[in-house]
Length: 218
Image (tube, rainbow, N blue to C red; front, side):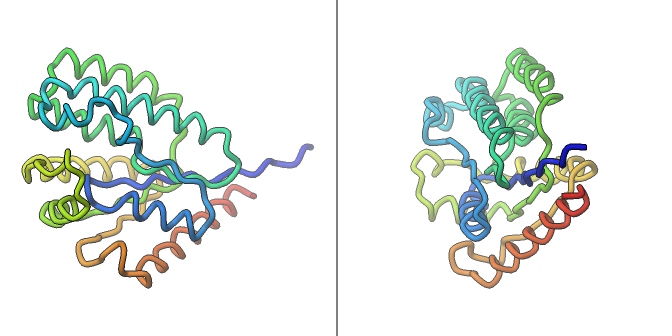
């Protein structure tokens, strides 16, 4: 019988705009030498237009992110070391696109086309071994968004972030039924300053990755 090949560990860092996903992903991967896949907002040709006119550009922007997330997952299938994805394709569809539709920023036709495409694709997608959900209140998110200073984000309103938070809580409860989940409340911690806190989280995640490998017989 041939020896079982190692199964790499795949985790997703989930959370609202400004919560600290990229900072945490970068630190986690630097400590554990895992491979990171970051959200490709800089190359989205629709993003600035989207924040200026969500109703006009919602569909185009979401399709771009869907395409980018699929590119990441294709690479994740071939990389031999543990991988971390900064925001998942599931969040794009179940939270961001849904929120735009519920706020009437995406038409019924556009939403149904987008969601049907996502549902047909999602059946073939690799599921993460661990969902890491970074949680923060609306006002904490607004403060962090202002501090990081991305021009196109500065006019995001509190209601938009609040609705995203509500959808995140519902989605995490549902997703966690089929995926191991670690929920991290970040309101009282600064991602750049609380090294002891970060190191504790890294240790916890590394332990869960080790337990997963052991349970798979690796």
